[in-house]
Image (cartoon, rainbow, N blue to C red; front, side, top):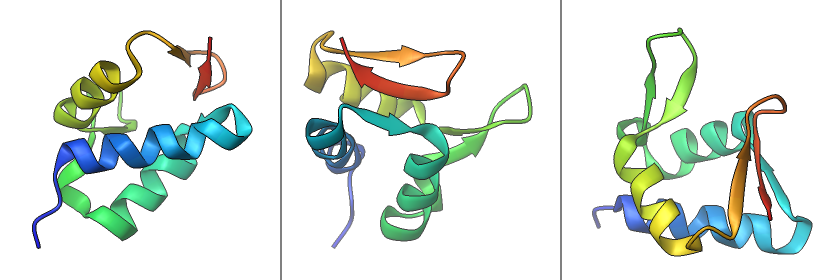
Length: 78
């Protein structure tokens, strides 16, 4: 069965619910191993990132209730 960016985004929200945060390194490692390499890429700064499709679905799902902490490289409830 083909996994979608929506399913990856749903997993991210489920991970953030109990603890309040999700670190990018943990998310990328899990997404790569559990959902597939197609959901990650290396950006122009040389950092591994989640695909634009995943980020778009994630933003739509949380509707502004989760914020990205640029300094700490994690997502957290606002």
